[in-house]
Amino acid sequence: MSDKNTHTTRENTQTPSMNGGETGIEVDREGDWFYGERPIFRKEILETFYACLRRLDDGRYVLEWQGRLHPISVADTPFVITRVDRITNGAAEAHILLTFKHLKDTEPLDPSTLWVGPENVLYCRVRNGRFPARFSRPAYYQVAQWIEPIDDDRFALRLGDRLYPIAQATEAETASPKGGA
Image 1 (spheres, helix red, strand yellow):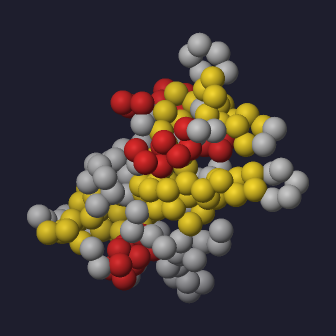
Image 2: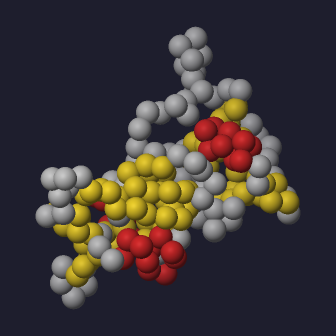
């Protein structure tokens, strides 16, 4: 997937400065966006926010706009997977296509990034590994049909002839950029 969400030009390659003020923008645990108490539901606004979304090294989320970083509050992750589709070709190769809440673009699952977080919620990394994404309950039930036990405590996703072990939260936290904001 190309990174069409970059707002850096060749003329302006400086690190944007942080805008000190709060934006009042929040993303709840279900991936719904709010300005104060009001839901943000207009697709073009949400698409702009996702295009401007950045995750800092310390795990905080910001919107990068006009060379400034504007902090937002995120309860879990802005990326919630609402549907998974298993795609196969004639050679019995398979991959899983992820559909996200609020986004028209889909992307293939990188099965090596799966992990189980708190409350046994399934997560993966998306957008070239830059962001965590949470599987909604319906998406989890869809992908669960391809998950099988490795032993008494561990599970893996089977795609074709390959098994992809699913990490536990502590393993994933040490292998991935910091979680939560």
